[in-house]
Amino acid sequence: MKIGVLGAGTMGAGIAQVAAQNGHAVVLVDVNQTVLDTAKNSHIKMINRLGEKGSITQAECDQILGSFYYSTSMEDFKDCELVIEAIIEDLAVKHSVFSQMENIVSNACILASNTSSLSIASIGSVLKKAERMIGIHFFNPAPLMPLVEIIPAVQTSAETVEIVTNLISSWKKTPVVCKDTPGFIVNRVARPFYGEALRIYEEGIADFATIDWAMTSIGGFKMGPFTLMDYIGNDINYAVTESVFQSFYYDPRFKPSFTQKRHKEAGYFGRKSGRGYYDYSDGAVLPSPNEDPELGKYIFERILVMLINEAADAVFMNVTNAEGVDLAMTKGVNYPKGLLRWADEIGLDEVLLKIEDLFSEYGEDRYRPNPLLRKLARANQKFHA
Ligand code: NAI
Image 1 (cartoon, rainbow, N blue to C red):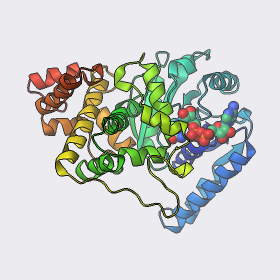
Image 2 (image 1 turned 45 degrees about the vertical axis):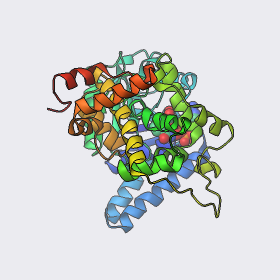
Image 3 (image 1 turned 90 degrees about the vertical axis):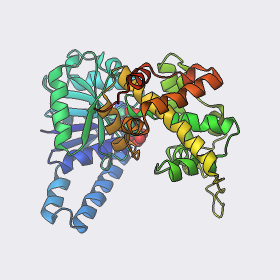
Image 4 (image 1 turned 135 degrees about the horizontal axis):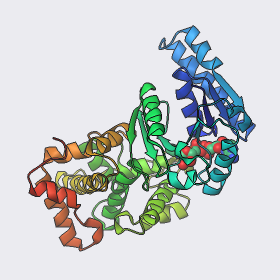
């Protein structure tokens, strides 16, 4: 199967690499020749590194590098059976390229988008044969992250879902099929990791370093929320939060934080700007956390139960099933444990009690317990059989 990838930036270059490493001829197209050259150099470097490490033979290196075709023209997609679009996140621009692509490729060619925040239905609306449209959402860096969210739109045929799911599995990735809803799985369920951490800070309960310490040392997460937001970039992370909030018709569960907004407005984007919640300039000393075990336990449990409540909602609203949520969060963002398995281990009645405490303390809709969590807890059941 010949694969096309449109956009050779961060995601497109990575997706093209994954396809080539799995034996496909790959056509990588970008409007910008400089970006294409950078992608090509990165492919040469990455594939040769695999050869040097002995992960692949020299012949395999040559074969993989020989399977890329770099171009500035979408006409070169004409023989592709699947094209994955990974260009700028702008619906009007995506509409324009999808209409053009449909006139180039065959009737059988599947057209996919790697969008993070646009609906697949809206992108596919410009196609004459919209049953071929699907979301294939990779995580950054695509060659390393196993999770791929597969998002059928209301227009997508069952056959398209099956072909794409089988293909992604054959690439030794973990496909999880989910509904075409804002944030899909990961970008929806992960919101409280940032939002509740910011809320705890805003209430003056703890500083950034203490919240990060609680989540890594007690919770076992690889990075604390503030370190992670600084790594992702506060501009990007704030934009995702705001987009999810708007897309959910301003559900208070997803309300963005002024603290993050002010950091973004100040240009405190994080590592890339030298300053975020922390100072990354040369010689700067990172602040020490307050390692009070009781405070740490409170912070960790409060953020965890909010994450579990959100994970429960994704299952309740049929975005995916419990297995799907747990796979998504462990394989897409490296959570130490599936959130719903974690909930089962703690005991759903205990998780529910903590959320009910927050709800009664604050009286805010943000803390309303999810109906599925409540139902299972009352019936003494679990998310996983
Ligand atoms: P990027 O800015 O690194 O790359 C986008 C590329 O598209 C650029 O090289 C640009 O020259 C090219 N481009 C723009 N318009 C074009 C056109 N009309 N025809 C051909 N090429 C065109 O962007 P990035 O980060 O790779 O994101 C791409 C898509 O992937 C977006 O939809 C984004 O939401 C999504 N995404 C991004 C993730 C990330 O962590 N960066 C993660 C998952 C999805």
